[in-house]
Length: 297
Image (cartoon, rainbow, N blue to C red; front, side, top):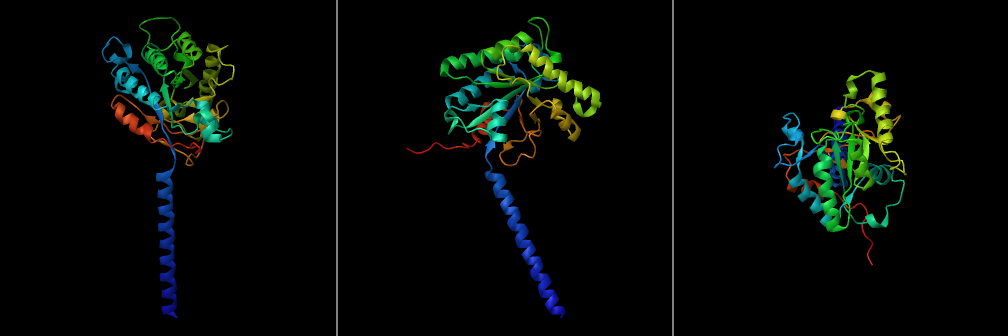
């Protein structure tokens, strides 16, 4: 009897091990083969040959800003290879909800999202001219996502301003280069404030961004998506965010894997700074899968 029990116990353990190994292997294969969509998170765009860029002088944020000379190389590569520059609404409609059929012009193309947090003035002075220059070269636009704190928008046109003005936002939006979304009213860490202040940060940011862009948003796509300041969130923050926004973006150095998104309020982004070479960014971009292949014939 003891021998029979021992045999059954040994058999059970072996079967359990086989099952666990199979489950782990399946998980790893699914993880490795999951289609990836690079969502890149930048901040300012500095001219390394112009130290008068005020943000460039700030030691605290210096490393977070990307050289415009290298940004142009990266954007040129993406446009040359016909990447699809995702807006936040594109990503929501076609990748999260999958509520719409993929437009024919996007079939067979790799996709990428370039987002810029905090609304630095150098987006207008250094990035926008690159976008305009490359549009003339390729006859296609490279659209970028701006996660903005409207409470920090500079009120007056000033060459020494750190942040964008409302007029800057309107110009880039009108020209079709900007996707204007929310980053909270004043960039507070939302996990560390009370419920009332949390609601103000979320609600007022949306209101002010829509006031700023009034008349330029016929499809009502301004400030419908959100990026958490400092990438800080928890269940309470996500619950409040869902009252006003359709999705929430992290800043956690992780690539977006299709089929592995637990919540549309926990969308991962790769954190990008000046330590990342254009070649390294290109490698990240090339990890993007063609989710829909062109039909033969």
